[in-house]
Each structure stands twice: as structure tokens, then as C-alpha cells.
Amino acid sequence: MALDHPLTGETADANPVRSRLVFTAAMLLLTVVFLGLGTWQVQRLFWKLDLIARVDARVTATPAPAPSSPAWPTINAEDDEYRRVTATGTFRHDAETLVQAVTDLGPGFWILTPLEQKDGTTVLINRGFVPANRREPALRPDGQLVGPVKITGLIRISEPEGAFLRSNDPANGRWYSRDVAAIAAATGLERVAPYFIDADATPIPGGLPVGGLTVIRFRNSHLVYAATWYLLAVMSAAAAYAIQRRRLA
Image (cartoon, rainbow, N blue to C red; front, side):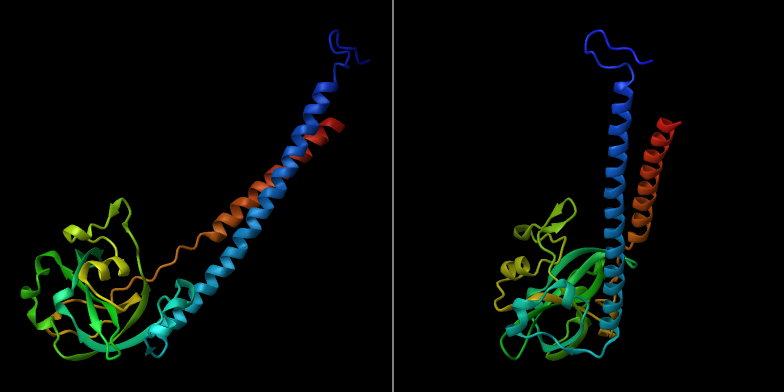
């Protein structure tokens, strides 16, 4: 027989019953939340797989002319990054910019050189990698191409501000990311495309810079995350069931 509590007047087993109900409700709520998170990760998984497929198609497609100035306002990462394009013009080697890089060839620099096109616009070309001991143009004279050139490569989206824990320092010529707008401002360029082009591995006289080093890698852990959330949902539902079964017992 349940006894009344001397102060509250409630029966002695009222609080345990209420606690079990609260715990059960909490576990059921968590079950719903975890199921929602798992489903969201599944959706992200299919989005990522679609993105990878689209990028694979872009990098192997026949190159098209690089987007001209009327199309610049619509350029974005999802629709345009890694598109294979061509650009024709003349290099402005006097305005090249060195951006620190770490590649499979070791540490060094990306060489970003403005390419002046016939319509008066400019697009930055990441011509490729040079080791630190060949950073000076005088040490790689054969690669300083003169006259009209045709570049084939991949569209890349500007990388503003800098790298992790390292901000670009235009005043002192220290660059850690390929920030198109900042580089254009620092070198006095006008009518510059809002993207840059990673040049392909077409051989360059003298062997430097080394092109074709674009790393195309997408982190895809969504399946693991989805499985984790669904497992937590099962565990939460099992806990709710267990506490209710114990009550009924």
C-alpha cells in the first residue's frame, strides 16, 4: 500500500513514476532528433556523391573558353569550380605573385601570373609550382613565356583573406592563399576575372613552373555520420522501451 508523504501529501511512489515518464519522454525526443540528423546526413551523402560525379565530368570534359566578363557575376563554386577551360592572351610577368604552397613536390610557391586578354580583361593564371630556391624569375628564365599563349586548365574560385592562422600580408608581399581581388589590388590590375585558372601539366620550357598539380579531393564521411546518428536513435528508443518495461514489470 502506498503511503502519503508527510510534507507533500503525495504517495511514496509518485516521484519514481514521474521520473520514469520524464526519462522516457526525453529518450523518445532524442530518438526523433537523432533520426532527423541521420536522415539529413543521408541527404548530404547523395548531394556529395552528385557533386563528385559532376566534378569528375568537368575535369575530363573538352575545354571551353573561360567565362568572359558578362558571365563573371554568376560565377560560383558549385556550378563552375573545376570546369576545364582555355584562355588566350599575354603574360604580365612583371606582376606575378608568389603564394606559399605545400605540394607532393615539397614546399615552395604557386606562381600566379596575370594573363591579359584581347578584350582588355585579365585572368590570373596559377601557372604551377616552383621550389623555394627557384622563386626568383631570373632562376627560371626559360619559363617566362613571351608573346601570345593559350592556357588550358581548371577554374578555381578565389580564396579570400588567407590560410588557417595565416593572413595574407599584401604590403610585404606575403601570400598564403590565392585571393584574386587582393592580389589584383596589390598589383594594380583592373578588369580582373573573379576566378583564377590552375594551368594543366602542359610542359613548360625549363620545366618550371610545374602545372597540373590541382588536388581534387572531397571529404565524404556522411555515411559514417548517418550510421552514428541512427545508432544513437536505436539506443535512445531501446532505453525508453527498457524503462517502460521495467515499470510494467
